[in-house]
Each structure stands twice: as structure tokens, then as C-alpha cells.
Amino acid sequence: MTKVKIVYASITGNDEDIAYVLTEKFEELGMDVDMSEVSQTDASDFEDADICVIASYTYDDGVVPDEALDFFDDMKDLDLTGKVYGACGSGDHFYEDFCRAVDEFADVFEEVGATKGSDPVYVELAPEQADIDDLDKFAENIVAKAKEMDE
Image 1 (cartoon, helix red, strand yellow):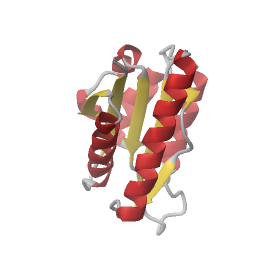
Image 2 (cartoon, helix red, strand yellow):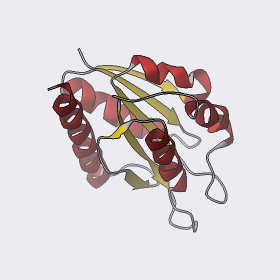
Image 3 (cartoon, helix red, strand yellow):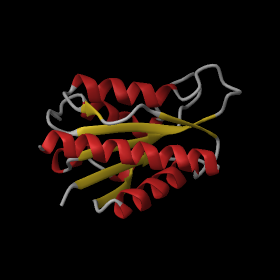
């Protein structure tokens, strides 16, 4: 069974909600899902998964949240060749660097050899129905990419 690791950083609960939406969808698609909060997770956990997903908010001036910095730095030491990744997260258009941490995580996934399974999903604050639809499609795209790579 394909293993999915979802890691989230959430201060308001929005990204935790995103992680739950994704967990539900991946399970519906027949995946074995493990979800955890970033400060309780080792980056190396991604090495045991086939699909790696991060859901993170963007802090202050467009930076990775403090509680995710060690995880973010540790990711740079991984080799995720053959893994499929997805990056998503919440933000607030009030800030200039809307959802920039999502792109920062995507860049690290690329640097360590993971294959992009879907374009990032950026959620304005809490996920609404349209965002949930986007997240469902995001999960479907990632699973399709993983299956394609298995062939």
C-alpha cells in the first residue's frame, strides 16, 4: 500500500484543518496515511513514505514558521529521489508574501530529488468548500503521479 506522510505547521488551526482534509481524501483513494505536527516530526520520516506532503502557514515577513525551521533545515539533508511531494498551506492576502513558506518547502523538495505531484494549493485563511475541492484535486494529482512512477 502506498504510504503518505503529511506534516503540518499550524498556529490558528487552518493548516491542521488542511491536513485533515488531505488525510481524508488520501484515505478515500486507498492510501496508508500518517499525519503529524511539524514539531513532533523528524524530517527523515519522509524517507519512509512514498508521498510526502507539507501544509504550512507563512510567518511574519514571508518566512517558514519558527516551529518548522529545524524540520525545514533537516529536509535539506534528505535524499527523496523517487518520492512524490505536494506543498500547500494557508495565508492571508493582507501580507505581501502570501503563502511564501509553501514555495520555500516546495523548493527544498525539488533540491532533494522529490518529484512534484501537483501544483501547490494556497488557501486564504481557513479552508472553504472551494479550497477543499482544490485540496481533493491536489491529492488526486499526487496519487496519479505516484502510480505513474510505479509503472
